[in-house]
Length: 626
Image (cartoon, rainbow, N blue to C red; front, side):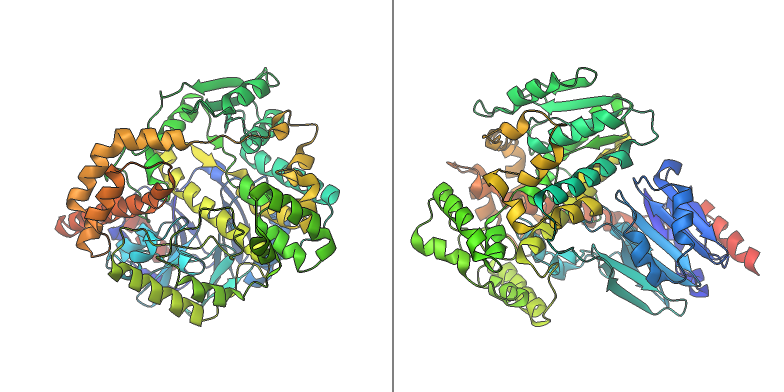
């Protein structure tokens, strides 16, 4: 799906749509008759409603029907009222509205899909694809942001995480909405705020169960097609599979047999499969699927930005092929449940600030599990600095060795680090960008550090899903993460801190929410380890990785030392932790090569014909208004 959205203004006539390869695009109009939404989408991905002088469109999976949307929309008198309406929409949707000449767009909090905008001449143009907007502008790479993309393990911290790599293209952050008036004035305002942790374990679990069921329904309701689901043998994917089995016309589970002999995921998956006799269970035999690092070329690289998990491109492509062969449109994955339901040290830190008595048993349990000494244990009771102060302090840690011990980590986010192969130039560029961002004293995603951390990681997951879906779209399927839906995130964050830690269970809230519906897996005391896949992928992919270093685009940009990178790639590692920063670097290198190739091809290609089908269609719309 590709969307291009124009404000309700005569100034949009100057937008050179002939630059875009959207000749077969559909067009929707503002109430004024001006062009509004241009793009390609399927009928099942759109729910819309219209009144005399207002229009609203939802793109993406949702249980909200056209009739329900129209009823909700009747109470909307301005774009400000969309805040309330959006809180009642489930699933994962991009929302666009046109009310009285004012345009408003927004996406899900997780950024599993999102909007970008570009100021072109006297108007702003919006799209769900950053690269589409770059085609309307200079198409130049924003080299000032390249070094930020080297940060690991999760990229740049908030709010630098919203920077794009195309000049002039601006991201609309998850939880924010872009509003553009007819006169061209615009604003980006926060419409979503995390709920306070107010519900007990029983109350919160009931809300979580309902949210998960609705999220799964958004991908199954009313469809006679089968639904695919991951079936790793872990708590998260197993939960979705059993919820989908109750709702889908038919269920196909996919289990990728792990390489490591110590990984017992398969035995748990097989045990749970016995409870789903009507499902079709597909097992990818050990070593028969693509290995990691198996596709290190620019063919098919998404030009919106670097893929967060470039090493697994072929894995997601293979999964999409299996889904397509099963006749399914959606493949459900358990991405996000760890972040939402697995308590961390920050959970205890937050509880310690409000109720010390309730905190002590959990501190003792964590101390025993991770063997904290007295000094490390005292860290739990430390006061966390304000977000902008933490952000500023992170600029001093960019080259510090990552602490892999079990010592408590009470940062707002996992501390960003530059890889050892980053040049001093790259490190200094990033350091200055972080300092500048901190000086603006940005607000965190939540006033609670634990919830900020969760939301930020959900956005990391959402970004990965967004890019993986560009791969899956080639096979006509969507990879979906129901746990990343807004309503599921809200339900999880609304549970009291002590309830999240209840009974010392790994995922107490999720377990209680699924009790009686999901068998066995919440009794697990083990967790599958996939380091064998990384070692095997590195072994098989080492020649291609080594070759990548021969003509490193990031090296030519002065950001990466090819010699140091090659040393890591060809070295021996007792564990996989030194390879953690490799994903972001590979993703950035492949993107940079693809982006430069695309720009070179564009500059050398003959101009597109001005009488393209899209141009003619838009011309007719404008003439009809005269």
